[in-house]
Image 1 (cartoon, one colour):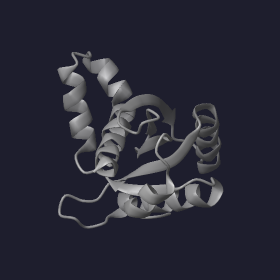
Image 2 (cartoon, one colour; image 1 turned 60 degrees about the horizontal axis):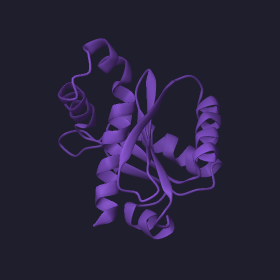
Image 3 (cartoon, one colour; image 1 turned 90 degrees about the vertical axis):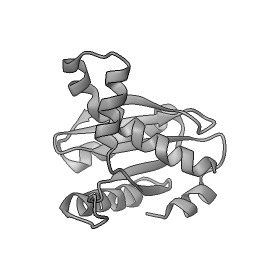
Image 4 (cartoon, one colour; image 1 turned 135 degrees about the vertical axis):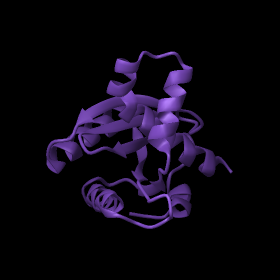
Length: 151
């Protein structure tokens, strides 16, 4: 696992990146365009075993020619690192060990709130919004990282 600045130097322009939102029951996946400017919600995976998650992510990487992974890091609002943050870090390290592309953690504070607000602005009904919130949160996380990488 690497820092965002190392990530920027290792992932070339014109490469697609995936963003991952690790929920307690579901995992949201978003994917960038080749220019790394726009994050799009991609899919939601059910959280089962980490080996299944790794296989699913490997498949997404291969299908979409992805060159980097951003994992949302649920840091507490006061800036401290709790149990969820440690879990995200452990999963990011596991991904970095098993998948041979750069993996980076990104502060995801308020991503679910932001994704929920964005989806309500898009006039998506509540049941669909709740079902898809994880991939919207992943897109929100990835967009924040993309905006940082562009500057």
